[in-house]
Image (cartoon, rainbow, N blue to C red; front, side, top):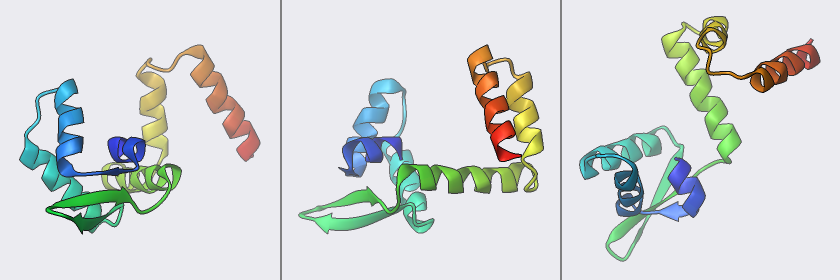
Length: 109
């Protein structure tokens, strides 16, 4: 999704080439993932010449929110607290990140 957002429109080949520059990945894996994202309606595709061009169906922020909700639903049975506890205890959050979380919680109350 990040690559499609960066490019605005992308073929499977373009996404594959970008990912392959970062890590070893199979073309079929990228194609399968993009098809799944299309089935979930995060992407839409249109045929141009002999290749499908994929575009995001919604803004990045909205898609990320929906994906996080789906993840929390599947992994944490819909309860977000265990995810937050894990993030805080993982120690990858620096003081700035923690302060931002505190601010957001205060504003939410």
